Amino acid sequence: MKKNISVITSICLFLFAPIIYAGGSGWTDIVNIAELVPTARHYYELKLQVKENPSDCRNKEWFYQDYSATGSDKMFDTLLKGVTSGFKLRVYVTGRCNLNGYSEITSVSISP
Image 1 (cartoon, one colour):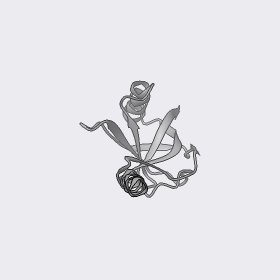
Image 2: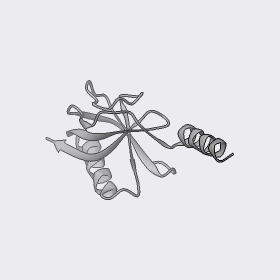
Image 3: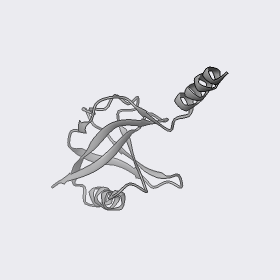
Image 4: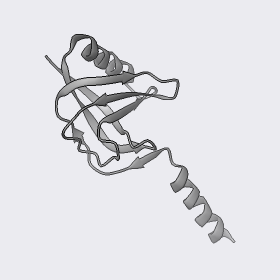
């Protein structure tokens, strides 16, 4: 009986996990930001039309950052500056993917 409960719990955790690890981490290539989307959910989204995304997430051009992550407000400000100024930027992806297949980011680097 305990084994059945463990199996069912494991399956539920796998199916309903909000974050999926897809592998690679590292910096994307440097591009202009295509879209920055503040949301009412627990994260903001951004679209970069990159040629190289080290993560193996399903969607290669969409990224996200959780509002509660340390430094997420500073990263958002940097992304907003990239939108308003036209500066190019790159992001560091962790290899984590959300259910939409977006790559999680933990750093933003802006380039004039």
